[in-house]
Length: 96
Image (cartoon, rainbow, N blue to C red; front, side, top):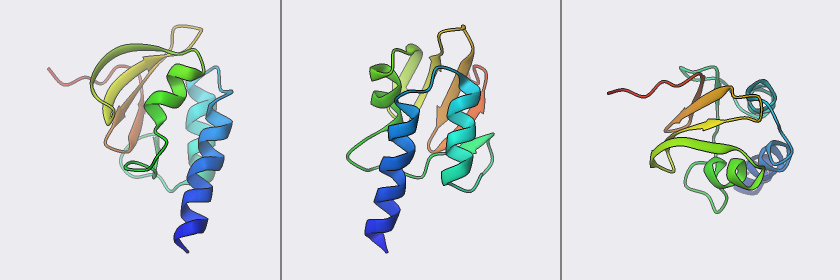
């Protein structure tokens, strides 16, 4: 069962590695994981591969980052997503 979970994580990150928009990331995550409180959820926190590094490798710009589990990233069109401990939200949701 654990192997199937991590295979799902890897499959989602493989698709996100070619994503160029916030909507593509959110749609991909919603196909692989159940939503929590955000627009989507990434269930692979704590694994070998992270959403943070995958987005950077895909050419996204990190707008701000407190940690790999709390950051905002911008796609090529300038749209932003925020990642907060698994939850993904459209827009810059930094709490100040």
